[in-house]
Image (cartoon, rainbow, N blue to C red; front, side):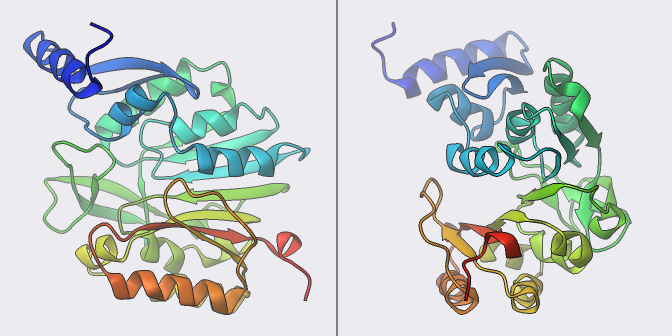
Length: 277
């Protein structure tokens, strides 16, 4: 049985679990043990197949927090907690995880509660947006990572503004992965993001257009803060950081591509981590 290809083994598992009424299942891997929804064909399935999740991003965050005496991490679009749990192993780091979807949030809460480092994590069942309030929300039927704010959404979720969550003293990092809502987060969170020493943000123009948004608030933030950083294809290691002009040019190339699969990880460095000159 172990010699069978993964797609066939997974299909046997998936169909059997559906027949038995299973709604979620546990996977053990490099980030620890996590419960994920059975229907999801991306996040928990990838963790099952590879035994890891976003090792490039996890490595950046581990290196960032490794030697600091105290710090804070905001995980915006935390999903089921794969990145939050990895960072929370740094006991001196206070994690705040924002997740609007009720199903993902239940699994996030269970995964954090099962973790020995759960007491360092604050969970907020809300979407980060341009304004605090309520917005409609669409739930994907096959990808728990593609739930998103949408005027046609079948449910309503609470929204919060990032600038209402100023960070505590210490090293501060933010991860943003919200399926196209990132420009609204930058628009409503400039002060908080301006205090961040490291920002890791999905940059997906197709997803932004789907939400009726443009990347302009993100580009304006880079210009106003003079940030250097990286534009990484998924899984690509970071090399030498790009200066502000090169960073903007690389992002505009992604915008011009504009396709559904044209997405990158934008990594913005704090002033103390940028090259001199």
